Length: 360
Image 1 (spheres, one colour):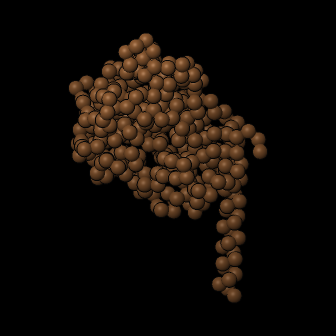
Image 2 (spheres, rainbow, N blue to C red):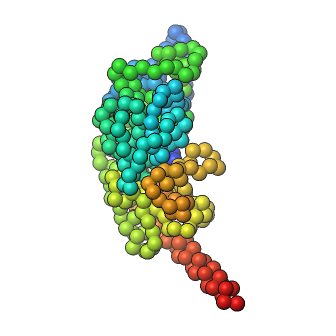
Image 3 (tube, rainbow, N blue to C red):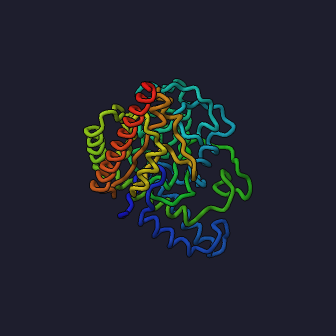
């Protein structure tokens, strides 16, 4: 097997060099950031530098950036104890705290009637479909959008916004809840009163440093147009698949999507088998939103679009970024097309065998 190709950026993007360097440097900050001595102040300075970088990159006052262990904790901090509505396309971290009543149309757009009491993702991690975030939305989950598209305007339409560093090249295990002006939250994690009393617990200084460095680099890439080139590559990739496989369905192709995300299916070819087969060929792809090791999620999002059980269970997701080459992506396309042809031939043989059995 040759060099592996990673095409699962929406699960976790590769760690950026800037983030790695920032984390290595921050490891030497020995003190606790809540301590008042020299070493503690040095650690605090690293933490606050990261907080400022995140706030400036995303358009928030740094004091309104609350560090968390990731998007899941940020969602709990934003939603627990509140009566909020959502739709079936949301991540489980949001669905766990909301009433799933908002309707989704055939194009994947959520119908939000009462923004202030609703939670809405700005981008779906499985299909890539983007939402029109209304002014005054209660909670916006920007986990998949930050670092791939311009997000500052929609983040500032929300009372609370959720993000996570590892989705755009930062370290795993650190995220943030962003509070708009005038918004406050009830602390759910009590203890030493860190994060201005909003989230107790000693902050992960090194991870926060990586977060700050990653978000600066990611936003710069978006501003410089790197992700528009990713979109062009994605569109060429999908055309290659569609020109080769007659029965393929590209989910969300008619909707506005993240530039790096392609979700597609051949009815009857189980997605878990595709992931295994392509993994053996050296390609890492996904059969949904991988929330934890050994679990494959996200089928609910596809069913909310009105897709059949068969089509939902046949969908795979390819997601990538600016460092993905055309040869890597087209190499995957050729491997997938070959595996698809093998699947179709197996189905034909099974059909002929069944016909002979009935005739006998």
